[in-house]
Length: 233
View 1 (cartoon, rainbow, N blue to C red):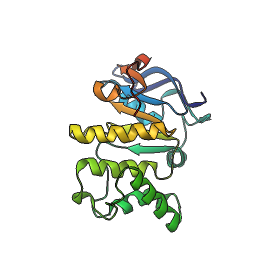
View 2 (view 1 turned 180 degrees about the horizontal axis):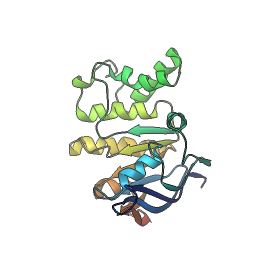
View 3 (view 1 turned 135 degrees about the vertical axis):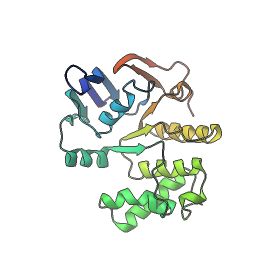
View 4 (view 1 turned 30 degrees about the horizontal axis):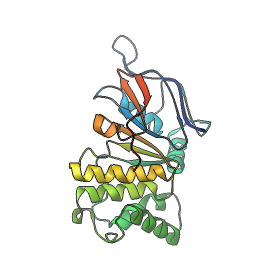
């Protein structure tokens, strides 16, 4: 399996010195192309800091992070932004949709920033919304949709330009159990199509939906297993 993500001896230290906090403490990790990984940990475990590193939203105090073989550890903000646009589709717990825009317009928005032409971005957005089962809701605004539907719009926005990595931060955290199952089902189907999926969660039930489970505690990886109970969608 070809390496997609490689984290080498990464530390993230806040308040260096006597009162320092090691949010990440010598973390090393490899994720191959086409894997489905859950990173699980309780509040304060370091999982959110690790997500920010993997998503090129932050840089390590020490150590290296390679994405597609490129060292992205100490890039400038602009360089990291370029990498995020090319490589990563984000799904956030809070949906992050713009209330005044339709589902289609919400999905199109990041493509505008990436310089995608009008016809192409409209086609990409329509295809993405259809893929998540919202082909009939493209003209609806967020307040006209359920929480589960809003999260599907967020997924469509993340996958519209087919980024290599789908990075989901507590993707079912604001949803009821029925909507949560629907979202996990969609994510599993995207994985089955060949996408690399990384879910950050505190919920063991969500983590057990992934093929590989990495547990982090006190800034360190304490276990990394292939899930023996994984069920294909």
